[in-house]
Image (tube, rainbow, N blue to C red; front, top):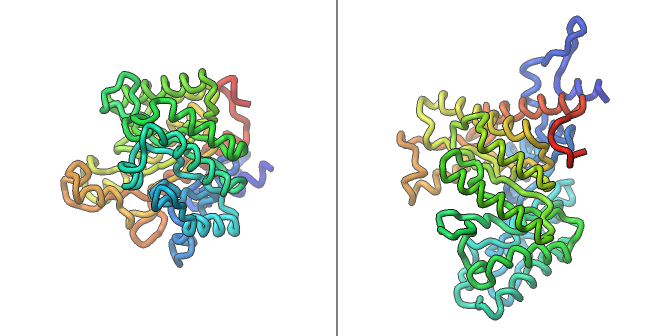
Amino acid sequence: MKAGILGLLGFIARNGVIVVAEPETSRHSLAALGAGCGMKVGIQCSVGRFTQAVLGSFLKNNFNMITPPLKWSNLRPTPDQFDFTSSDREFAYSKAHGLAVHGHNLCWNSSNPAWFDVALTKQNARDHLISHITKVVKRYRGQVDSWDVVNEPIAVWNKRPDGLRTGPWLELIGPEYIDLAFDAAKAADPAALRTLNLNLCENQTHSGDQVRQASLSLVKALLKRGVPVQAVALESHIDGPWKPNDPSFLNFIRALRDTGVDVYISEFDVNDTEIQGTDTQVKAAVAETYCDYLTDVLSVTRIKRLIFWSMSDRFDWYGDLGRTEARWRRPDGRAHHLGLTDNEFAPNQSYDAVSKVLAKKLTTCSQGEHGYGSHLS
């Protein structure tokens, strides 16, 4: 086993001392490196990306999990109709090619179909929520590794004392909508992992402290009520540069870990809007941000699911946001460097940075890890 791990990482022995053979380490599969620590490594995209010539090879080589589009807006054209045409295609390809599926998402107070405004009422909202989750989860029972059962439940800017995000489910059902969603998901497929997907917990500002406090309070309250939450996923859209060893953030991760839930990273990428410098300097700072953030999380907890949101700089969703919102535009007007490959789908510095963090983590996994918390075996 040890020899196999050393071979995977490109380690060699010199005079009895193990050293890393560079630059080979940075070009080994992310999925293989993660698997050495029991971690699935995923990417957010449709399976169609896997069939593209250059990009497809990169994806197949590096990821063993996929987050396809499974929101209400993808599956529910009308209040009375489901359209599983695209999602069935996603699952068929994933099954044929051995990709685990992370389902995103079953319940969200934002980005829902336009018919919500007309069709949902206080009288029928519970039935709509439960029936949707039941039908979708049962259809793909046994084919989903994990579900984002409730997405982005916290929005401190809505000024509620509990920090909950306002929207149709909260307004029509109340905070109990979260309980209903998790109970329905468990009943429909007990084997699929049930995740609470949290946004902005990585924010290194005063508002980030507020988000973390509200998020931790919510997790503890749900567990106290017996709501079957098994994991908390941190979206991790990082505003670079990341300031490492942030005690507020690290203590938050420890507190989550100590509740007994698993901690995942579910939408990992880097927003370089505020990073100044030449193109070369920005790319280096983005890579360093990937490295520092992932290192910080792994320093305090194991993560069994690591899912990236931006595979390539070519797909610049921050730039798309910037067309209508000035805060997403780089002051120099240049495109963002957010992904793991460049515009031609070649692995870049950020990919290398992530690879090296996982390679280092694999060495500690092979030697046995200690000190994360008593609930971890």
